[in-house]
Length: 297
Ligand SMILES: [Zn+2]
Image 1 (cartoon, protein in one colour):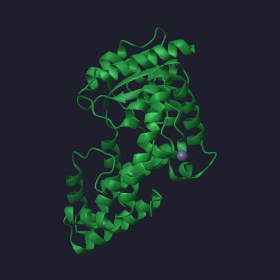
Image 2: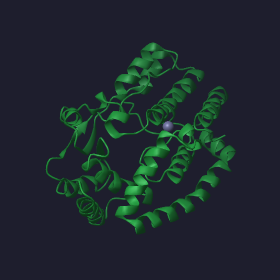
Image 3: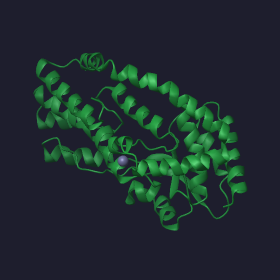
Image 4: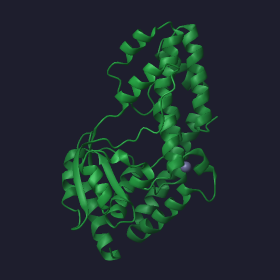
C-alpha cells in the first residue's frame, strides 16, 4: 500500500472515531487504534482486532468495516481471541482445570488482516490458535507476562485467600462458578493502571502493555516495534503525534501518585474485600509478589 492510500485510510479511521461520540477511550488508546488499523490493512502488522463490548463500539466497527480496502480480510463475531498462556497454579489441580475451562471465553470483536491463515482462524472463531506474536505482532515476553500478571495472579490470589479463610475445595468451586477472567481481578486496580501507564508513556505507539524487561531495556522487542510505528505515525499525523506526546507528559504525574501511595492503596483494597486476619496476610503477600512481577516496588 502506498503512502497516499495509507493516509486516506488513516483519515477515514479518524473520521469514524469522530462520528462515534459514545465511545470513551484515553488519548493513547484511540491514537494507537488508528495507527494499528492502518498497519494491519497495509500488511505491516499481522492483524488488528477491536473488542466491541463497550458502549458505541459496535456502531464504530460498522463504520470501520466500510473502510477496509479490497483484498484485505475482515469480519466480526464472538471469537476466542485471547490465548491462555499458562496453567493456573492454585495448588489444586481440579480447581486449576475448572478455572482454565472457564477462562477460554468468546468475546465480540471486529478484525482485519491481510494474512490468509490468520483470516481463516478468525473466520473459524479461533484466532487464539496463534500466539500474540503471530496474530498481532506483539513480543512474546510481553504477552506471557501480561497474562501472568494481569489475569492469572488475581484469581490465584482470590483462591489462596478463600483457602486461608477456610474454604473447602467444593466451597471454592462453588465460589468460582460463573467466573469470568478480567484484567486486575481482586488485586488493587491502581497497581495495574500504573503498569499500563508506565508502558504507554515509554512506548506510546504500540497498544500492548510492555513487560518490565522491555520497559527498562534500550534494544528490546517493544522498543523496535514502537520506533517503527512512531515513524509511520509521524508521516501520517505529525500533529496527532505532538498531542500524544503531550498526553504522555501528563501521565507521569498519575504514575507517581500511584507509586507514591502504594501502602494506602493496599490497605484500602484489603479493607474493601473485608477478609479475616489470615486472609489479609495472604492477600498482602500476593500484592507484594504482584508488585515485584510488575517491577513497581
Ligand atoms: Zn517484553
